[in-house]
Image 1 (cartoon, protein in one colour):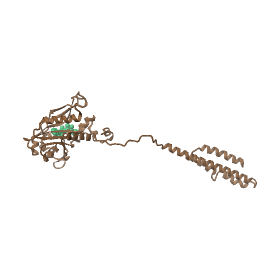
Image 2 (tube, protein in one colour):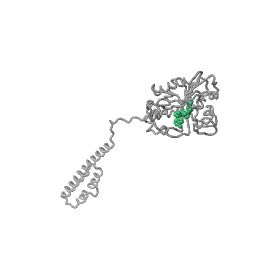
Image 3 (spheres, helix red, strand yellow):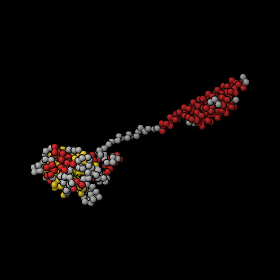
Image 4 (cartoon, helix red, strand yellow):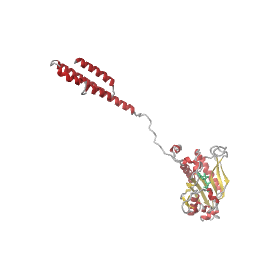
Length: 341
Ligand code: FA5
């Protein structure tokens, strides 16, 4: 009996050492040495075969070993639990010294930021900011601007026509008309807004933004147009900028001009952006045509005025060196987050 107990103890010590801190293996050892089919239970059952003198000592020895095994198993279970906790803490460790992730901040869209800056420059010069409907009628978008039906210059602005005489405005010029219809000179206004044309490539969008300026008063001349525009663009780009007007045709102005600034990428030396000319076209300009004044009931013999219109998206494109206008409307945050306000 004592030999058998010694063997059981040796086997138990070897098994519990091997199980280490693995909770599953410790449990297997417990079942093997303390369970119903354990060698100790078998020995207990044999106690009855011993003589009355031998029985108490043998029973005591079995009980002692059982207690010692129970204690060792309890210690092993505790060790396994502590090990498991340690492992869990390691796996899910939090480094409290790491700096926190900074909150994600949105920024103004480059077109919006450019528009706001131009508005601010004109507002500082005493101009009002006007808006008008994007769904226009033929009269305000074309006829009042000296573009009667069948006028060939209508083709220059591929139009989205809606029902009746409705259309999506092709430029912000109809806001000039609406302002002159509702207010008498002197007028100093700018009208920024969305416009639509059937255009779609790297430098043309079907929906883009224009900003137009209009001044109407007595004695207004081309010199005022040139002087004001010079001030605006020197404020926007810096004092180094040079400007020029080139004769051009727009039905609603006479004389008409295209307005260029010296290329801000190469400083006027000539580069890919300005196609080696040293100049960048910003938009159209000119003296308000007498027919436009007549359409809104302003006497062209008393008043004169100048108007100027540009594409805001193109200005933003140039300002940030963007080579494809379509990027501005795709709303990809990876692109937009490059322009922090
Ligand atoms: C006009 O729309 C005239 N109303 C401007 C004007 C106002 C002239 C007052 C004279 C007096 P134009 O079609 O050239 O002009 O357009 C003006 C600007 O809009 C262009 O210089 C260009 O920068 C921009 N633009 C034109 N089409 C597109 C387009 N599809 N996508 C992006 N920008 C465009």
